Figure 1 (cartoon, rainbow, N blue to C red):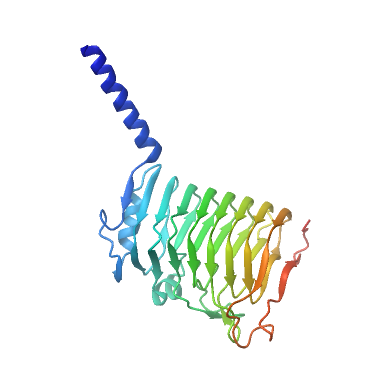
Figure 2 (figure 1 turned 30 degrees about the horizontal axis):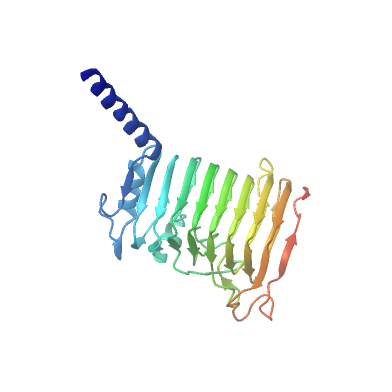
Length: 297
């Protein structure tokens, strides 16, 4: 009987260990790391400390509340960011955009990262004039660079002056049910691109709703070493005061094997005064461009 009891205890312990490894640990940024969820004080350091403490398979939990940021966050491999539905990560535009220009959520050379949960990432709505590239350029909302196996699902990214979501030289990407919102151009000042897929491959974008001032969903290849291919966009709704679904302008490498299926193009709900097109319509619903002596096919 004693041997059976010991065996049962060992089996339970092994199961518990496997469960822990499978689901990982949850790091609550408020309860465990003292983040202020009232929006009164900066929470960047608290949340970054929670990210740094995450191990393989762990979850960063950002519960309901307002989280004021004065810099961006650097993610780690093999983690999940869970933004609950009433969680709002809000940038202080004076610091985050004009001084360090960092993305709110940055992933560089990482693998197996998921951002999900239904919450909102807000850039504060700072805009910049088109064509003034010598000025400090604002940062992005979410940026994945040289990453693989990355997922964004069910979150809202809004009021980002730079690209709202940017994938650069990455692969095996999923974006599902993402809402992106940015103001149209008012006298050539407005939000930037909604979602950019740059030099990346094996990318699936489904059920996304994007409305911005510049290009809504844009596919391009900035580096000759990184062609952009095997891209699927399905069941998405796009609106822009520029181009809605666009390949280019940058095509230093090939762009090929692109499928757009079930795409709805709308007029921007607030196109603004002094828009590039006086009627407030987009410049084009579909744009396919090749400007760098390479091939789009």
